[in-house]
Length: 413
Image (cartoon, rainbow, N blue to C red; front, side, top):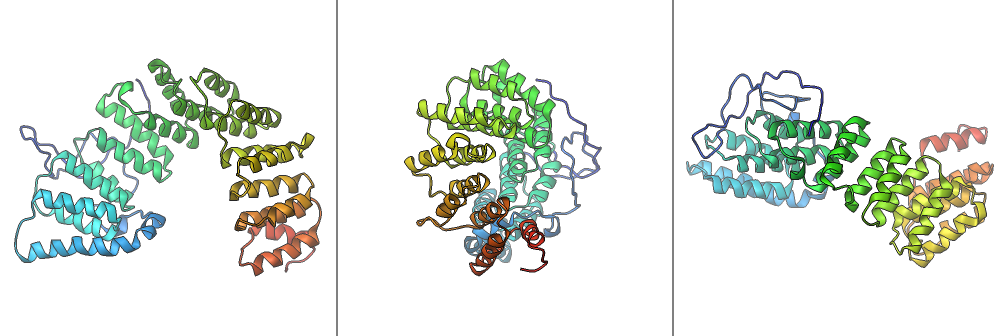
């Protein structure tokens, strides 16, 4: 497997070195590390809270658990220090696991610094656990720093950074990590799990790296893995993103079987290329083959129906299908129905969906309703609806708000 990328700039930082002749990897410092594969975007001579990249949503969800577990970890460290007892590596391992679960970045930084200054000689699996802890606590910059110090890395090391960048939507870095991993480990194509190929293909699509995606497809063809449903859907989405529908359809036709993932990927590609009639045909074929449809499938097809201005009442047919499968109360499907009816000039139907009981109205449904009024030239009604929206505690989109203001000849509402 030959994967090509731009070589990283020469680094001049400290590194983790593996001492040969020993069964463990020891943390030491040296002025240069010529084996560096991944450049640091934001480097720091020490690990501190100022170099962190915190995933705020994840941390908020763990707030209560963090207070409890974070305090217990720090308490144990303080107690051991007060007793002048060296902390064995098995205790450190337990603390790292606890901190990984709690997701507390402050505790993770403190614990990592404590381990560095303890003088222990941790094995590579333990350093990998530290990487996972830092990533789980939203400290991607810190994890990258530790990663860059390591002169010895195994697959788990690389996979941790690969997933960390992927979860952080740093898709260009995902591709760079994958290429560097192949160069560093010299692994055969067959040794990479299917999920990693799928993540790589999505990253190539999101970072506009068509060349690397094509190379990945070539490797999968060589392995005979393109018939796998998960990988097939990833390839279809990849080619669809680059508007290569002929290639996407070829992958679809060679898949061993089809499920919701492969069909949905094909439908999204058709919508992107404005092949709305084909999208509707694909949707009907899904039904004939008994493939389960989800909210994503319905939303995509309803978008196509709206673009077709409900030609031959295709929107009503999809709406009836959504009712049949109990999907009409889904917030995404409901919003798509409102948008489809509004675009097709069927505002009464859009209002009926909006007023439908049993589902909470979200801001997207309100925005879709306003857009429906605007699309049909009912500017006063759109303005009235904006007042109702604000009374309900919803904040309309700024661009939509400006559009209504201009249409009504006023800068206020």
